[in-house]
Length: 110
Image (cartoon, rainbow, N blue to C red; front, top):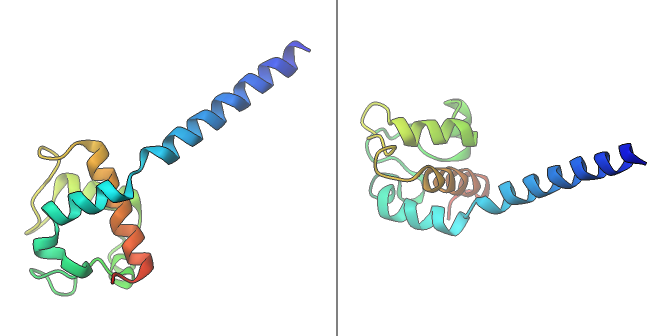
């Protein structure tokens, strides 16, 4: 009986952790952050500086940038002409932007 309650407790914690992490992402906030900080160079998923390095699905895949981890790293640290936003944006905002970008790339940017 003790093992049952321990197992139930662990399963409950796992469910709560999963639910909280899923709720932590705010796509709308990511969109707002993107509009305020990224859209000057990346409007519509394009790239006005390096034309071939768009935020479109195919380009993200070709450049191995098609994951939350990769996009978060790029936004945080910058690269080439892209500035680092790690000192300007909160980690949660950067994660929201990464989720927004990946979501829009899957939708085909409109």
